[in-house]
Structure formats: structure tokens, C-alpha cells
Length: 505
Image: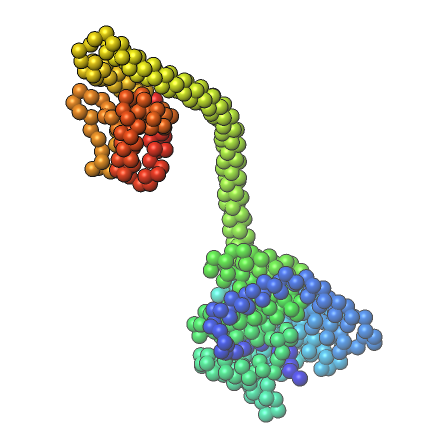
């Protein structure tokens, strides 16, 4: 079995099917879905720990297992279980001591951890796991020290423990392939040979399943190696992988999720950044480690402030949009009401106009009837007058009739054109250019025009037209045929089109 060495090491997996960025996008979607279920995973982890606590007999080995399960889940509980093994037999006592000091250091109490490490009554840590714990302790203390002299002292101690760890790993590699891989990986990191370090840790990770919390630790180390190698895409990919495993294992001591949140924030993905930082802050509070809370709080405050600012902006935009929408709705309602009123008035006007048109048509019909009656009376009067003149011995009765007919035509033209002022133009518009008619000087209409003027008035019988105009029916028919032949379009509908033209003057 693999030793639970809390060591920073990389995992290198080459994606063949997709590019680096598409892989990251897919993993981020997976992380989103898992974060939604994070409370269920945490509850499951707590249930598992409770089941261990319920086992009997409560052996030192079982206490050590419970302390380790709590170590990345709830710091106070882990501390209590480790302290319960203070007087246990070896090697349990040493393993508990290493875990306890590592826990104290991981919660940010570096001075307490160093004091525990230097306590004469504590067990020896002369093994690779113990030296690594001490090396990480002093490395973190050097990174967080505020006083330069303490920082230098911590760096020296870290280097001494690192050298001891490498010696121990070299001694152990004859018996453990895993130790050999750790050793090769660290040697490559010393030489800044990131490719070789990744290659060795690839083989190392093949011995761990993604459901093991050690996978999350190794994936985090993978991200750090890619950061050193300058590959930002792979760095983010393995941070996300580490975070996914943390969530699925129900781990609350999250080392990756808050960094992923920060990267999402820098990339402009504010909503995802807020979800991840909220998840990380909630877990940091539950885990109760000052260092982790401080790490998470700083980007969390920035992300939360920006998120709140964007929410306020969105709220303002929505408020403005709602106000504008309300104004638009009010305007639309007013427009509809106004339109209904206008429509009502328009219907009333249309009704009045229709009544007026009906009256006008009736009046026009009456006028046309009077004109027709007038023509009948006038033409009959001329014939009677001519007959009387002939009987009275008029020397030129034909000339007398011609003079009277000229007066009749002139009166007819004036009367008709007073009602249909554009008849001449409208009539010619129905004829082909070569068939159009122009009245002679001194005349207002021609014989053809008078014939079709009577047709417009509703007198369509050639015999009746001949009687009114004092022509023979045959002459009237010939004129009608001539005009039809010269019309534009269908000749059969010519007279109907004539009847539809003209506007009352």
C-alpha cells in the first residue's frame, strides 16, 4: 500500500482527445456540478468518521486512523485524537506525533509546531516521512516569517531537514519503488528539470486512484510544477482536478479551490469565482484553521466585493429597464386608448361620410335624371319647333334646326362639364394615343364625347341616344364601335370604364 506522505508532487496526464483549454472548460463544468453536491459529500465523510468512532475496541491504530481522517476535515477534532495517542506504543506514537506537528503547522501555528519538534521528550523522527514533515514545516515558516533573522534560521533548518529526507529516501529506495520515485522527483526539482520531475510523478500517480485524497495533494503539486515550467493552462487544469477530488472526498481543508476561484475571477468569470470562493470560505470556517481562512479570505473579500458591485449594477440596470418598460406600457396603454377613441371617431366620421356619399349619389342621380329629362324635353322641343316652322312656311327649316341643335349641344356641353369637369381628359385617357379626340375650336366636346357622356349618365340605348342627339341609330352605333376599337385594354369593358370615370366638380 501507498504511504500517506503529505508531499508536494505532480501528476502528469496527457490529453489526446482535446486541447488543454477545452479540457479545463470540461473540468470546470464538472467542478461546478460537484460543488453543488458538496454538502452531501461532507455529510458522507462525517458519517464515515462517525462509523469509525463507533467501532470497538478503540485501539491505538483506530485512533490514529480517526485522527488522520479528521486532519483535512476538522482541525480541532484531529488535534484531540492525536493528543489521545501521546502515550501510545511505538510506532503509533511517532506517527501520531508527526501527524500532530504537521497539523499544528498547517493551521498556521508555526512557532508552536517548531517548539513541539524541538521538545526533548518527543519521539525521534528519523525517517523520510518525519524529515519531510519537518522540512515542510520550516519551509512554510520561512515563507511566512516577518522578521528576517527568523526567516533565515527557518530556511537553514528547512535545508537540513530536506537533506536528511533525501538521505532517508535514498536509503529506502532499495526496498520501496515508491520511495525511489519520490527521491527521483525531488532530485529533478532540485535541478529545475520540470520535465523529468513530471515524468517520475506520472509513474507515482499511477499508483493512486482519483478517489483518494492523496490524488488531490499530488494534483496540487502537479499544478505547482506546471507553474514553474510556465504552462498556465496545465497549471489550472491540475488545480481543478485537485479541487474536484477534494469535493468528492468531502475534504474541507481545500488547497486548490480558492486558487481556481482567483483564476476564474482574473479571467472575468465572476459568477463561477463567487461560487467557488463561497464554497472555500465555508469549508475554511468549518475546518477552523487560521492560515487557510486567511488565504481564502483575501481573494474572497475581493471577489465578493466585485460580485456585490456587479449585482448592484445589475439591479440598477434591471430597475431602469423595469421603469422604462413601465413607461412604455403606460405609453402603449395611452396610445391604445387614444387609438380606440380615434377609431370610434373615425367610425362615426366614416358613417357620416357614407351617409353623405349616399346622399351625394342620390343627389347626383337626381341631377342625371333631370339632365336626361331636360335633354329629352329640349330635343323634342327643337323637333316640334322645326315642324312648326316648316308648316309656317320657313324658307330654310333644315338650317333653322341646325342652329337650334348647335345651341342645344353648347348648352348640353356646358351643363355636363359643369358636373364632370375632367371628362374630356378622363375619356381620352382610356383611348390609344392615335384614337384620342380633340374638340374643334369653339367646341367643348365632340359628337363621340357627347355619345359617351350620355352613356356615363346611364343612357346606353343607341336608339335613345340618337333620339336625344338627333342622329340616326346607325350613326350612333358606328361611333360606339369606333371608340371601342380605339380603346386601351379590353374593348368589351370600355363602356363600363367610361361609366366609372369622372368626378363631381
